[in-house]
Amino acid sequence: MNQQQQSGCFRELHAILQQQAEAISNYIDYLQLVKNAVAQNQTDELNRLLSQNSSHIAPIEKIQLNQADLIQRYGYHQTEQGLEQLIESCDQAEQLHQLKQALSEQLKQLEKSLLINDLLIRKNQERVRQSVRILSGHGNHQHGTTYSRQGNPSSSEDDKHSLALA
Image 1 (cartoon, rainbow, N blue to C red):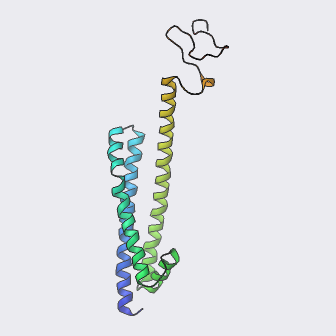
Image 2 (image 1 turned 90 degrees about the horizontal axis):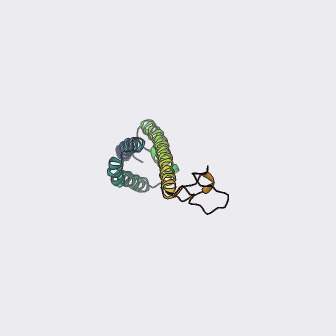
Image 3 (image 1 turned 180 degrees about the vertical axis):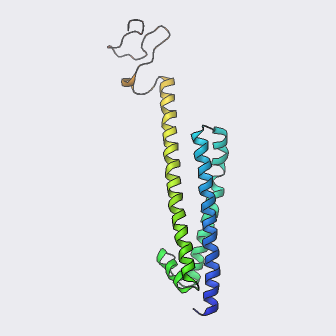
């Protein structure tokens, strides 16, 4: 690669890595808002935020495609190794490595945020399911029995007693 190509490579790859970092940072901020809405039971806010989810993912995907195109245009495979080889062939490779390392740290933070949000959502879904089971009288009768207005257990099991007799 000649000096002009190395300089162009640096500019293009630097721009793409910065765009990725910004898009991932925006997605992490978005996930924090979702986490807060879930934690505070703000269903209207949560619905609004969830309707915006694709607007945060689409830019990341587009930038990733641009990166893959750039790697291929410079003659490398569209893999992590190809990206490393492209960085090494560019001007100011050390600066690109630092930017890529910062991006890797952001990706780890994004993965952690996604995991936390997934756990919160699953926990709240289970809480809602449990509430629905209790309110509807369905579910596992080993944990308790619902009673009719007359005080009789709704279960037909023979060993249950009326609430009035308990």
